[in-house]
Image (cartoon, rainbow, N blue to C red; front, side, top):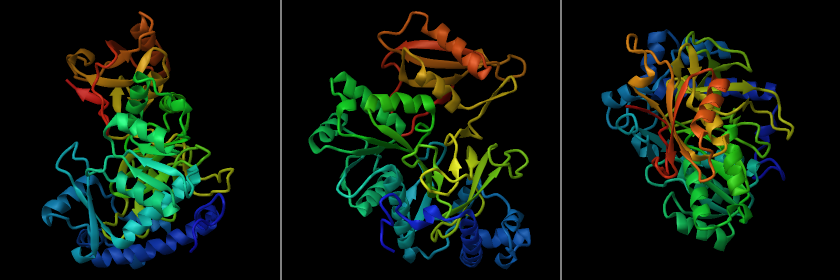
Length: 440
């Protein structure tokens, strides 16, 4: 099929009716489950234990007969059949690439891709970059880390697929990145929100006016950011450009990205079937309600996943968007992690909610960290009674910044915050995934 489909749409599937989407998904699920049952040692065992056969799938409801697949299951499969595990569904001779997890919570986990997986990945990324405004002939500067991180190569292939001129800059040498933007008139940059914030601060320090540069698209992924209003507002102001949320995970590239309308990531529903489940009961929640995103690949070959627990808390909206696209939108992007959620005196607190307030608050820099220590715990029960927050002050910050910020946080989140205000530059910077919650 010729790409792009039209001036605004890369692939006609983006405008399918809901009936077309669901008819396609059910047919694709039947084929995918048959393939998984035949080729994946892990899912052969899971299907047998559940008393399920791929031929039993007659409706989406039948999928719920299968158990949730979690990260721990993937890791156990790696230990059972090292180094690539029991979930893989191709011979190693048919795999052409392996990417690894960041390894922040344990040993890095490998995920395989087939040649078709790579082509599909590049085309899906291209679909979203095109929806955000990238066109043939534009200059695209990739600032994702190319060392081990999954996003860099995917973004590079996608931009090339569109016909853009790609500058594979990586997440190093800030001064050279800025010089490159200026000299080569970059239109679109992509990287983590943390690195984009770092770039903006570095530009201010050397007197480089990013807002007056040629950059009009800032695409971010790898960590929450672009869908958090405070972060988006601050970085869009500093860059003088629109910011787009690019949501994916090592195990599933992509899940959903913003379009030019910036209404939230739009799920690639011809690539994955999505369930939104209550984290406690595992029952489906209605559209508009918070739940954990669970996904099933519809055509992934090398490492297909069935009912994969992402841990990401989202809100789904299946209303078609004004630009004619019909795939479901995740309102507000990833709202938090089910496993990162803090419970403070019965209040569920996500770090992303704190970030929204901090980054929109006058007098603070882009950096912050939440600290859990004995000072914010009940001495008898060990339960949290509050949260310690460290922020940095700008030169023009008021003397009572900590007091004002603490009041705003409590007013908005109904949680007690102990705010420590530090000089600018005190907190560690990162060019990759920032760690926002630490225990001391």
